[in-house]
Length: 225
Image (cartoon, rainbow, N blue to C red; front, side):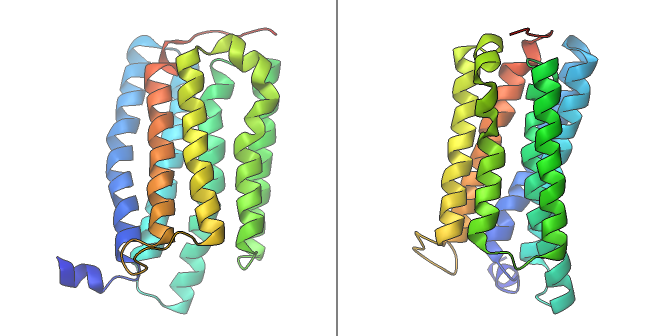
């Protein structure tokens, strides 16, 4: 097993997100199954988008970090890896916008974040060498744009839901900062800054999966604020 990992481009970075794929698949399946049993069509559609975002990001990241380091594959999968970050951020917004915020606030915010996601995808297609700080700023701006809907959010979500929503954002933010500055970097070959970034990304996703399963699943209806 160790010899196999050594042949991979980024062994631990790929392994962390391969584990995330293995966790995202049953998590998505459970969300969809449970939504079909007890929730609404809005839940079902939005959880499908959220689950697809998780699976697409972590699959693209696994392939990027594990496939042989050839110029063509490097270019293709690096683009996909970076594009899918935008997709997951927008996919995470989708259940929030379509369930607790459904209505004017929800649809407006949903359109904005998916518009930013498409802009980011185009940017990564034509300018993959964009500096890390620019990508990081876009990810952070997109992720924390949710604060513009703070008033309707606090009306629609419980304190527990807001806690898990915020905690996920904090994990993602810490990861993005570490990605941008490439520090700390304790053991570069096995557990460097990039691997820590991956683990924090997984923690952020985990917090938001719990948010969907424990809180958003039980909500139904539009909040007018």
